[in-house]
Image (cartoon, rainbow, N blue to C red; front, side):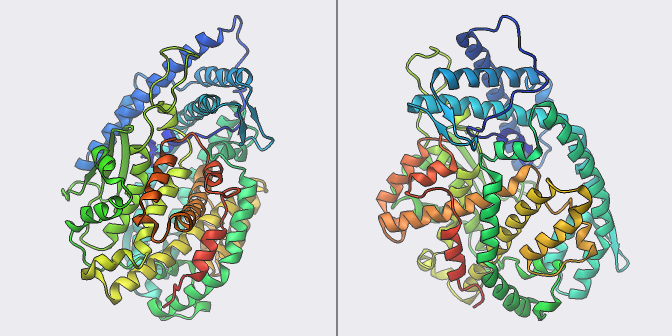
Length: 572
């Protein structure tokens, strides 16, 4: 979690399931290799240190969120610089290979699916894999620290001038969202192009350094590492992203035309990239008293029989201290007993959707089985209960899917029936804008994934053209030379879009299953709560496709979400 809150929490969550990670190229086979038990003890000591470090960092992040003070995360690494080394990575990978052999586990040709004879074996392999890639993520974060800091400093200092006024570059999206004048919006967007070009230079240097580090670690390509941390075949996911764009194209085209006319009084053929944030902004001008929020949590959890345990383990902070961060946050400091949610209410209906989303993040942590990771006697005394690796590490797709699942209750018309004070035309418009915004964001994610896959395999000189072609399709508007300048900025590193897309697909598959299996609305059914408990007890042991298999699906798939989006009346 920490460097993308050290970069929005990416480093500590840069982990994967059972992807076959290559041994570091720089590592040489050691003489007098330790026994498996000795090696396991060494790796457990590494895991202990990593767990303690992450706990300290999360505690600092929480304090920072509440007070507005910088968390000073770098100080926590003073005694841990040598922890995330190539040698540590090599030792963890060595143990993983030994376990694969002794426990008679095999990996499929796709490098993702794991076949083991027992549940215990699966847990051991998964825990070691998650730990290995967590260490790789931290190693990369340290190796890219200078470049990350340079980009952060540049983003903070960049300005641009439009119509005689100076603006901070970091405010561009907010300005485009709030600006009513098309002429001013386009002027702002065009004027920011030079700032985007300067930022792209720093990003390019970081990309070059990242490629070198990955080669040193033995990864054959950036995409190979991306497949590892995203625990999926990215090429196969690219086909699903392409399918998603194709099958939502008509719905999106209609939404773009109708909302463009309503919001901007502009014909579809005159719309540009600079208009999209304004068109797809979420209307939040429906008042909602902050005291209502916890009542809605009770309303959701009690029928499913989840309320007592959840409220014993989850602390929800709804204070509105002036220096408290306005961004929602969920942190699991101790699993399952200490999970925290922070939300700074604005007094608007959107607060409810945000809290439901964070609750979906928190609940899986609060219901993890305390027995998770127990073994009979492989290495007595070494394993914690539940294992840090199986709760705090691993890919984030399934946790994000549950967050999206719980947020989706907000869009169910029956959810607001118990809140007559918010019913009305403004609420209907808010819900419609929320759905349209979701479609826009998911198409953007699909475009980012496809573009990233294409340009990683193309001549660098072709990248701007690939960006224009792919993102004009995703955005539904023609792109210009000013847009082409954003080919390195309008994207996400390490194939982050893959997690977001798969989480959205899986969330809709879960919602569909819960409704069909237990009744509608699913969030009022005790059996649905019991079923969710059974899924959450396993922590991060199972991959997204394996979770899909538990609800009768062959794999994570976009069809349920496509069906919902194309049936949504987004343009009423």
